[in-house]
Image (tube, rainbow, N blue to C red; front, side, top):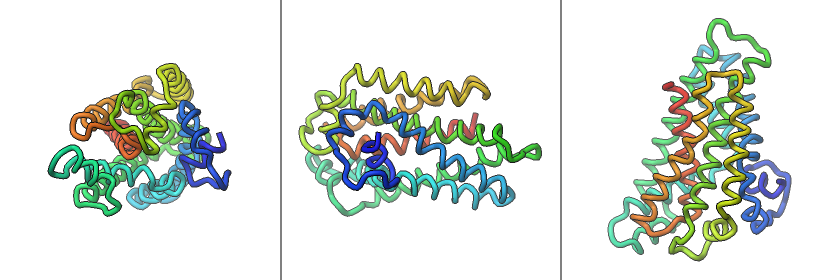
Amino acid sequence: MLDLISFLTQIPVREEVKIEVVAARSYLFPFVALLIGLPVAVVAFLAFGYIGAATEIAALLTLLALYLVTGLIHLDGLADFFDGLLAPGSKGDKIRAMKDDKMGIAGLFATILVLLVSLFAVESIGAELTTAAFTFNLVSLYDFASVFIIAEVSAKLSMNTCMVLGKGSDDNEGLGALFIQSFSPRKYMSALLSAVLIALLFTVFTPSVRFFFMFTGIVVAFLVSYIAKKKLGVISGDIMGASNELARCTTLLLWAIL
């Protein structure tokens, strides 16, 4: 777990990460999502509770807390994925564009769009949770924790789904290939069961429909993987990172709308 936490977050629990261990234990990603979602929920709870009138500022602080905990590695994958996806030319040209260190306009646009949608979704959710009846208690904190933990579980489950869907991908090198080769349907079932248990824990006192938001990550991963295989011919680490960001954003958007 220490290697997993060091790989998926900025929490300084290990100086050196054993990437082979992380790949072999990637089915535990939903539990790391729990550790990511809790501090973000606390920041959102305090921000919206104390400066609830300025919901935009509270939402911005929440989003900053999220990326301070997780880092920007997956956001970088999102930019790379869209740079490759929208690049002209053959599959080889698209892959070269995706691996280019420079960010293109497609990657920039996708990154800004995902951040803006996430920001507006968090603002809407926070405003809904801090109504006139809001008080600083464990019930209110639980409500915030439900949102951000389930959104993060959805994001991490999307990465696990990309791993199992990546079997047979043309890309046999790189970090993504290591995760795909180390993964298996049995490990995926372990990840799915863990995600379900965590989602049940944080929706038992909320409307039952919100339990199903956890499955958003699976839907997003299927869509991203299908597009990646068709347009690029590979499922790489960048594509897994993109799926993570898109799944979290979509889950927050659904929570805000429904």
